Length: 234
Image (cartoon, rainbow, N blue to C red; front, side, top):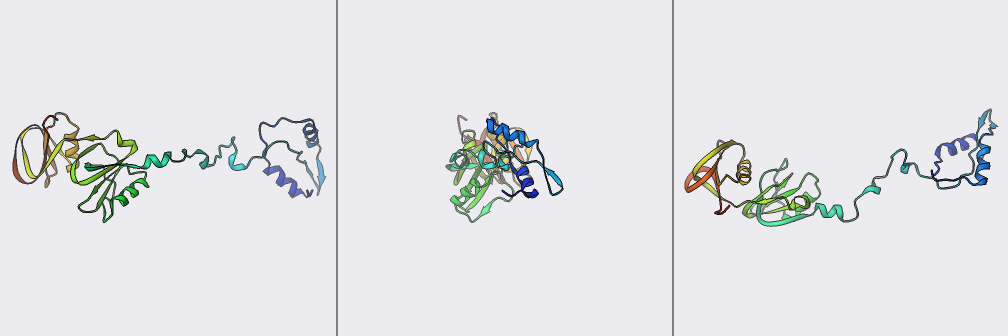
């Protein structure tokens, strides 16, 4: 090894010694030599003693918490399994659409792959009739929809509820209204689905108004109204 000052300096700054090193007699002798300075090139240089034990790479120093990310990855397969979707045909997850939805002209498997690779996406509704993909940031209520398929990630699979609501277009549900809300159609459906008191709803599409009913008597044709009623016994 060269005795050039730069060489000694490089050795002093790069060596990191394992903390479980127990000095041997020869190592103690080397430590005593550390106190003896070596004069060279007009400066005093302290030689590094012969080291016993392992030398750690700077990226894995425990004291500085500079850990490598790969050391903390989930066991192989676990993270991938959590991203997989559980599919239910004939149902729609209401609300919680991510910005920019839907994605048009995509296949169902492409819709699933897109969601599985996006951490924001926890569920999808796929419109089979229009090849449209709705990625969602959450899902709480599933409603019957023959032309749709829903898929949710494992984290939500046991949390979503199945609603017994039956839907009608251009039809008003006649009954006793107990609450009026403003919002979207999805908000109206969710409000009725999650309220045990609600037996039906009417959504005035032009005015974005929702009426919840605790009693349903009959149905009547009414243009511009989307409605729903819960099946008997629910």
